[in-house]
Each structure stands twice: as C-alpha cells, then as structure tokens.
Length: 285
Image (cartoon, rainbow, N blue to C red; front, side):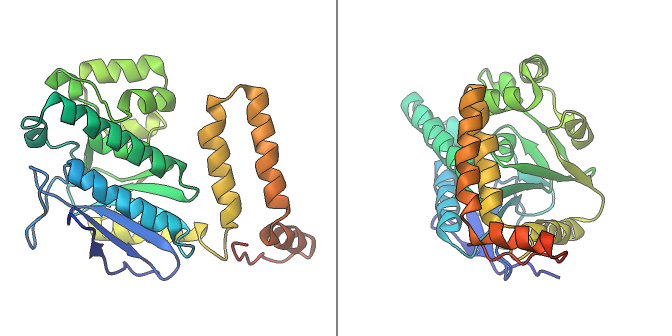
C-alpha cells in the first residue's frame, strides 16, 4: 500500500508538495478564507490568491521536471473543501489592472498544468466552487468523495464571470447549453450531478481518510512498471491539443506521437510481452 508522503510547503506556504515512493506527486492547496497560510491544525476553504497561484505554479514545474514523478494529484487540505476559489478579500482590495494580471497568470498556470505530459488527477475531497472548480477542470480526471460537497461557478452572483478558464473549460466539458445555464444561474451542483454531466469521472464512498488512501491506490496504476508513462503522456497531449485542430491535422499529430512511441523501449516491451503472453514491465524509456 502506498503511503501518503511527507509534504513540504512551497515558498508562500499556501501549497504543500510531496512525492510518494512510487512517483505520485501531491499538490495540496492550503489557505484560510482570506487566502493566507493556515495556522497549525486549522482547516480552511483553501481560497487562492496570486501568491497561491505562484505556489501552484512552482509545484507544477517541480513535478514536471522530476523524472521520477509519473502522476500528479491535486487535493485540498482538510475535509470540507477542495477549494472555494479566489479570495474575495483579495479581489476587494486590488486594482482592476492587478485583477487582470492575476487572471492572466492563473490562466498560464492552469494551462501549464493541462499541458504537462503527466496524468493529473483532481481529488475533490470537498467543495469545488468558483476558481476551485476551474482548477479541477484543468486536471485530466476528477474523482470526488460522495456527499463531501458541491461544485459550480457562481461568479454571476458577484457580477463577474469565471475568468480563470471557467467559461472555456466548462463549455468544452459539458457542452454550451448546459454550461451557459449553470453559469448564468450560479447554481451549485451535487457531485452526483457532476457525474451525470461527465464532469466527474468517479464518485467514491468512504471517510476523508479513506478517500486520500483510495486516491493513492487508484493513481498507482498509472505509475511504473504498470503503465508506459510516455504513452500516457502522448495520449494526454493528443486529447488535450488535438480537439482544437482541424480533424485531419489532429490525425497527423496523432501519427507523429505514435511514431515517437514506436521507437521507445516501452513499446518494444509491451508488444513483446503481448506476444509472449506475459505482463509487461515498463521502464518509462
């Protein structure tokens, strides 16, 4: 059984980071309602500020450059929140110019997460609201704990829109009509509804402690030697970038990704193992 790793705080102490022995990087959001670092033993809503986004960015790059990391898990500190989104206190105290650049940097950070050629799993251990859902939608797979919270983009109630990729990603994930309805109404949805909309991949029963362990166990199937991590990365690249291209260009992109994999040691191992009727042991090469 994979153990939860010891986590270290990123520079602004708003994100905790650690890596399991089998190569799962944990990025844990941790802040109070104003977006400040949590006091010892506290469990906040994990709202984000520009400082937290910089910590998220630092953690993403750290995982991206670590050859021993094969999967990234995003999760919120505590039991009640994945993230409640951007800090309203921060938004109420900064200039319009700062807000614009804050959204721009957040866009860049989440795009980096989305384009990182490693599988990213959002572990929704609690409410994922506003910017919290925007972070989750930039992940590849979303898994939620049953009855642990709600999700939605209620920015309409503040007189604004979900400006950290929310309108773009929700529309792509669930379709224009439903996305528009939920954003203009500001309705918060139970995680069960998220499953119906294909916004959540899996909904699991269990305690908060069990959920964290189950996430590690499930994510472990995508690590070495069980999965060819280069193939996982190339599948992700094709699925993330391809739909934005004309179909024939997507096919050409897919062929190039496949050609690169055919030259890999893992492809040779996978094909040989199939022919020899044995389980492949991938190395990531």
